[in-house]
Length: 323
Image 1: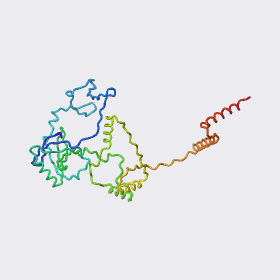
Image 2 (image 1 turned 120 degrees about the horizontal axis):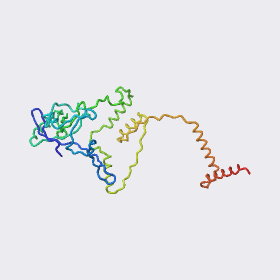
Image 3 (image 1 turned 90 degrees about the vertical axis):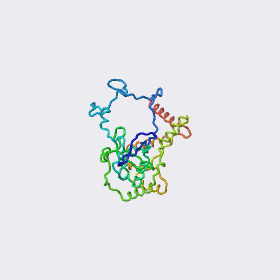
């Protein structure tokens, strides 16, 4: 793993030298944008629209836009003046229970390992946290940004996870169209929904879940590399379930039997529409006329209906012509 940060954990009067490694990685398959004509990767140049030319990295400075088109200039010395002294330390502030922190606060995860002289202190903190069952709230400065973090155990490793500050989590009352907490619910529906949750509850096994889209995308890419034809999977029809109770009953039946079906789609009951008498009479007359013509058509002669109609029109025109 690549070391992304070096510093120490400040635990009371104890300092534990540590190295930091990124704990997670995105495994998404990414595409490059190419020029259609020659398949050359597109280059994104940093252009100054005023000077009409590409600018070098040395020509770029920082600016905070306080109004449209108006900036306060910020240079490296300004940032250095306000960088906390503990920029190379993970300062533990408090210990709390993990259950007290809602998952919405968690952001990025990092593994911490001891540096050469910190093995014993690292093992001591790990054992104390394991015995107490607590996690630590800490502050750390990385890339000139002070972050709030938690320190907890992951298997036999001490992990640091940056978390959002309270003002960075949007309030729930900004979410539109949320049902009220006092929405009346049918007792039998609530009972069945709770039973359904119980039937679907299993121990968490992360290896059980896979990114099926990424696997299929990788397979498709490999087939294209090998020159194979790509088959399209058939589309599975959706199940339309109108009644909520019916959906719950079907879900309970499938989970109780040990088989899990595709979630049913709840759709509103279609509103009946009144028939249109005029259109109906017109269609009925048209059908009757077609049936009558078909009855008069001689059997065993393909296309005779068209010939008969043409002959009839010709005879009518001759009869209407005065002699």
